[in-house]
Length: 421
Image (cartoon, rainbow, N blue to C red; front, side, top):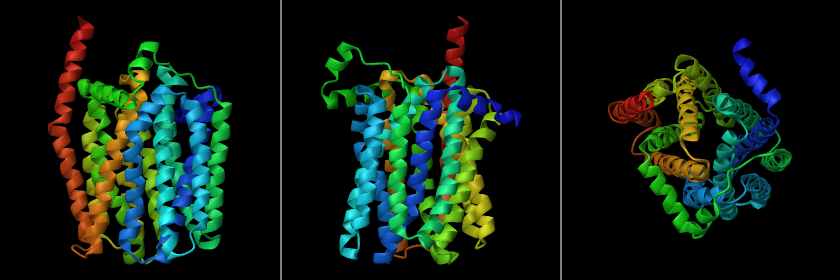
């Protein structure tokens, strides 16, 4: 219990972080609880593997396309109010999917999902940018570990319960409950006090044109390489893990023959791994100076674990190694997030996190698109394709260690010299 005490104390004593955390928890539960229902709707009216992949691509590309403007919006306007508006609008978008009753109407699900993701493109960087504003510097790492662990627990329960709920309650009730979680999230954010460093009058005047504001954010990122390095970590990871996570859908359907229940179990193991990874990573590597190096190792571990998944046909073996893969990925996620929060000025934080989301979603979309097309045209079978993606993830980790890690060490050395002088 003692290792968990700092997290418990943070939630107990920091009321505003607790409310932001509760908002994240219920909305994330709705995200994962409703995702399998969306897959089920597509599968009901189409037997195309490409369309299953396309819904993920639409989600990712919608996030990517709107991310630059979302970052500008979250830096320029009140983040608390933006998050409430996004929650209410996402509830409406999810309820709209209820009208889909035939193959000809499937396009509505894709359009509403796109709108939902555009709103998420605002909500996510606003939420992540707000965490340093409701915590002290000492609480920041604990807060991010809690957020990621909660995401994984909610992901685990949401996907697992969602699989059974879709099977036994039906997709309509799942979508209604999904919308309700967004409304509850908006209520918790309404109750929270979230400070924010406002732009100066000069900054507001200079960035009144959104394109100018976006360009300034890009220049800030490119100029500060110590911020650029952690900002690309999630994108590098998703360039391969995105396709691997998508392929779990096909594995559950075609290899395991378990449908939504099998997918719920595999996604649950992913969630558990993502939750325990940051806790283990922090205990093994408490010094932030090592974190960029650890990211390269995390890529290698994740790739190797998925290669084992590609070898086996046994559900329990898959569950164990998917868990290990995403434990490494979860550690990478928290480490890169905390480094960005600490190294970035508040008035640029929204744009930096939205750029990170842009890289993440673009890489994820390309990864899924390639995997879905390869499977659709039967160029490579599912198991060898998992092996290929896993080996490419390992290669990415090796390249990261030889390049990005080396540059980070130079930065840390120069920073140490500056502080000592």
